[in-house]
Image (cartoon, rainbow, N blue to C red; front, top):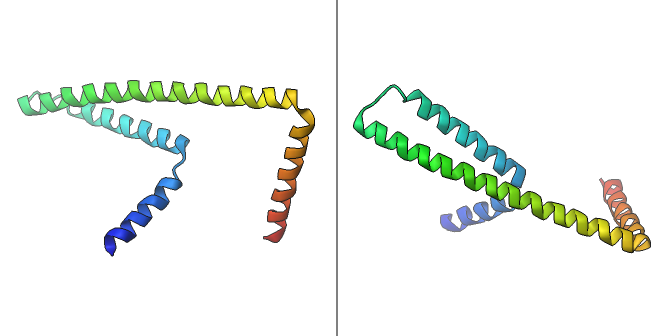
Length: 113
């Protein structure tokens, strides 16, 4: 029963994930990892040196992956914006109708609170 509750919490938390917050958290994690690596720079013990070099490689790979993901996400957003712009230019009255309908729904929801 506990596993089901934890699973439900995990599913709920995953639906609340904000991509910008995730990127921000990941960048903060990378910054903290870099600070930790720099703090151990003076220790040249064999075990610590190997861990530091492995961490630096992983961090470098993660930065590159984040950059690529960010670029791909930005490109997708630009394409979606261009598609919306194109739709509005081809169908201005439909766009006005959709905007008016959404405005009405939002107004009704705000009024009920």
